[in-house]
Image 1 (cartoon, one colour):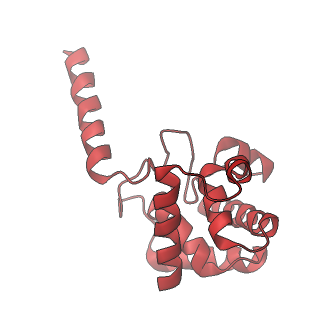
Image 2 (tube, one colour):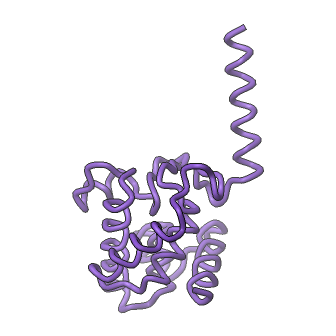
Length: 162
């Protein structure tokens, strides 16, 4: 009986992932773990100011990555609002990647570093945020991955609309 329930749970999780999932981000948009919009905007605005990145760009990445869900975990292991990989969390000294302030602060620091690396080219920085700098460097531009190209388009469209 327990085996049957596990199987049903796995199918339910798969169904919800297919129904609501977005670029492998392990979240449901506007799920109960999503922060209140005013609180999220305050966190993003403060971190963006500290780290010298446009708040609209940081907001667009947060929404593309987690939909505002501070508890989001991707199948690849990325965590929190800005979907930091464990190595990125460690590099930016994040103790708890599910702490919204720590996550967004580290994510905006990383975004600042990517913008600096790519001469403030937002498209390349966003592509590197998704696919990693090694992929952007290897392809001398946005990698030809369907997921990355869709992600870049989605983030840039949202960035322009904020």
